[in-house]
Length: 226
Image (cartoon, rainbow, N blue to C red; front, side, top):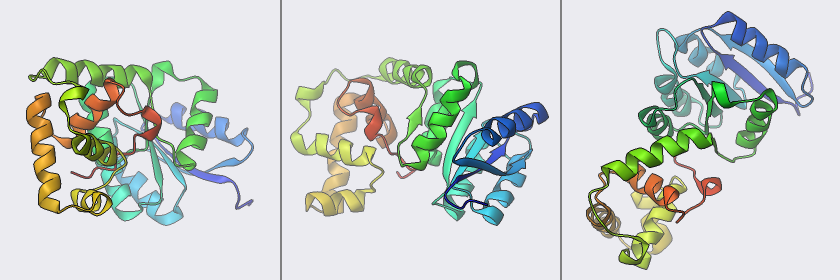
């Protein structure tokens, strides 16, 4: 086997989808399917056994859903990129996927075959891939839940720096090192951000910044850290 190929596993409880995805990958140069699973538990076991570069995970599976599966994969095999494939564009699924550490979230009804191939290559190269419709749903949720009236001009430069670094997946401690301030000061900055924007978590703050154009989707790199 050519070890330079991107090694992929496919986890989906529908046989035809698994086989169809496998056939698609077989025809693609530089990508190879090294295993398939029909539920979340099998997917985790398979990832631990073959250590693929990319795991394609259906969000809805028996025994363990795609979100919980992603959490475990990222915990036990952090180098494996997880690309979640879903029929649901509901915002809570997308937010949960981001918090679980997913590197991508694509909608089944909005994904041409070449789109999946492109997404596999993108996450393998370290770029996150999120479907526009899914992100739009998150934007609507964040906007509807926003209680504050603050905008970009109401945030201090240091508060904006905290959001940008959080979007890269950094913990409060790592942000503190980057900004040469204390952990406690970082926590205070986020508390002020939440108050000004009427939000309740780092994830919401990052997604709101994304929806407002303060950060770019290509820079989004949340890995489940809170």
